[in-house]
Image (cartoon, rainbow, N blue to C red):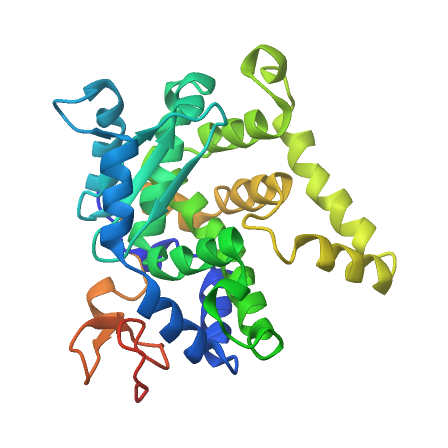
Length: 302
């Protein structure tokens, strides 16, 4: 079963990306980041510090990559193992995309949960999140000052980029559910990352956990000041709150849209081959709704 990203991409992801590209200052921010970003540096660090995983090197980990690559129809990324007790996985790159998983992740989760994480990371690749996602991670790790750009002028673009980055997680969660044909492994992963190992959280009620997101929203609705304070709390975060993600994926997986995808039926969504156009300057494929090329930064006619 293969499916188009237009079958499962979250509407808030698409909307946030379109808004991001229209924010004043984002074009300058993107051009600056593209000038200093060098995939060869990341590749060199990976080769020097991490273990590259393949069918010959740690095949018991490599096997988790095959299913999402096949079902999402993506080119197989490089895969690395990082010595880090914190359970984590992340995807970097654009033309040389790689996924890194930590030793903590492999020890902490069970097989279905690990598979869901791999599917989630491959979902970012399928949705073409990786370039903007790498930009967002750079800013989270190093800050705007590292670019030598005027901070106040760029701040709206940075906030819009990080807002989109959080929305993109919803699409990657959907991709994981599509690959697994079930949302339960992803939900259980979110519970593990929120509350601790399976020995403690095995009996957590998933329904009650997802309902925490509703209580969170009710609390925000009490006053505008609550929304302001929460906005300040989350604006530099890389991910939405786990309970919110759990509620989103649980709701979507009860819809006919998800069931149709899992049954392998044709979707009414646009075919992925019709979702892109070529940049007149560099000739690379970009989303047909994009206002400028994410590779060379030139303006695009819609």
